[in-house]
Image (cartoon, rainbow, N blue to C red; front, side):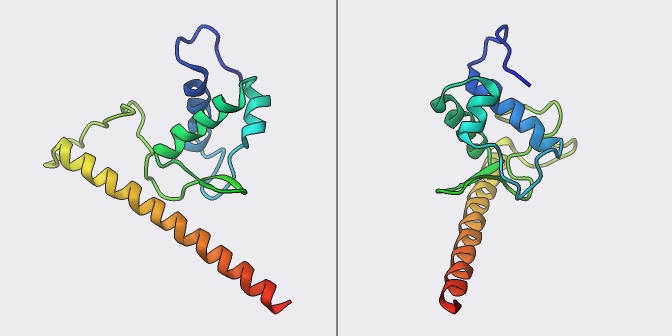
Length: 137
């Protein structure tokens, strides 16, 4: 997989789209690590900052979370995932839905915040488990 020179979008958006497709197709599953900045640089022939920008886009969408010093991982759940044909900024409401676009945006924001909180809790639990194992040794 490589970036298209004929695509008018910036390289970081193209890279983010390719990784997003791998996540949505299940090639990279929830909890699995996504390629590192260095791996993205080599794979797509992009600069370090471009790779960082690509992962930032996915993080902002709620598709991945990053653990400092360890890497980025696919979020579990559906926060940030879009259905086929959905817009990146605003998916269409379900037919017959009584939820307004503003309510939908507010709910999406709450889900993202909860996803971030969940990832923080998971990280803290992992750190506590590691500290406990270290103390037992």
